[in-house]
Amino acid sequence: MYEENKRELSINALVDTGAEATIFDSDFVEQMMLPWVKRETRLRLESTNGSILKRSGTVQVKNVEMCMPDARSGKNKTLDLVTEVACLELGYLLILGFDWITAQCDKLRVTTPYGLELKRVL
Image (cartoon, rainbow, N blue to C red; front, side, top):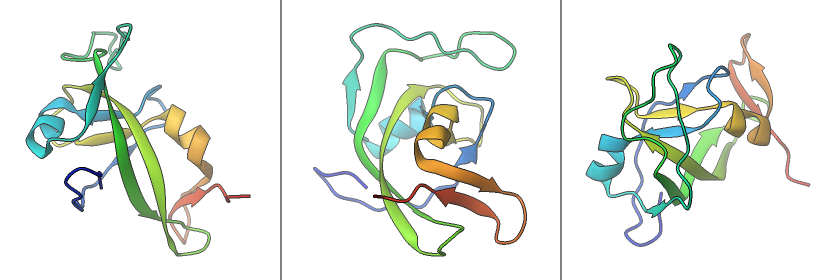
């Protein structure tokens, strides 16, 4: 969701413990007109093979909320989402990287109930 023209979209995200940054696909950002800001300094984002990700490191998506189920409670939680933007491989709209995982999750559950155990708000 985002404020100016509040919309709800349902997408699948790749939870990638090997990705240092959380990244939205640049084409998706443009098509959905997600709110973005220009970075003060360029960020170097690389793929797993070491090549620079196209259209990366110049803008961030901000003022977006993400609603997702918590594996521990089974309830949906709404979280603020700030991401980098880059040209991702076909089929990936959002990669939740290690930065997001460590900030938002206590556990990644690979047994029933599958999913992410989100950090509790104090």
